[in-house]
Image (tube, helix red, strand yellow):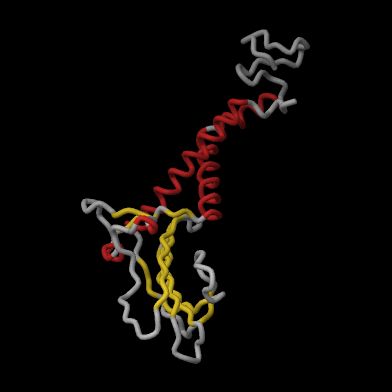
Length: 218
């Protein structure tokens, strides 16, 4: 038997709020990309760090964080690892760019394996992506962006599961509070006082379960 409080209307409203929360989540993350200024944080010494996203099988378990930039709702990291750090060996590099508030919810990730003796340029995201690397799209030229964003002009699309879920629930809860919260609170107060939740008629002397004022079932 379905619980009384679990109505179809409640399920629909919850789904709508979660959808709106996800839309706001994406809009906030993209606003951070376009508007935030970043600060370069040079590591005082190379430090080990886990990969920020999944990498191909056979890569080293952890990498060294060489470069990092942070801003309001933004993180960019450059990591690398070697098969044998003591000798000249193949290098594995990963560049990640994450955006979102309060948690990082969208990201771009690019990685490659650099063979010994090969020359590579800086690992920066370029547009357009190849078919198997499409994780974002180019910011239109008419959109004003911060100086930091001008070199890459890409809005991330790849979701980070935990961050995207947490942000969407946070924004959905906020929407519920400002839209439905006051009405739910008023209804709760009326019921607690023994009044009709619809018209506030005093039902303490009524035993029929139907409000004689508005006809609502209570």
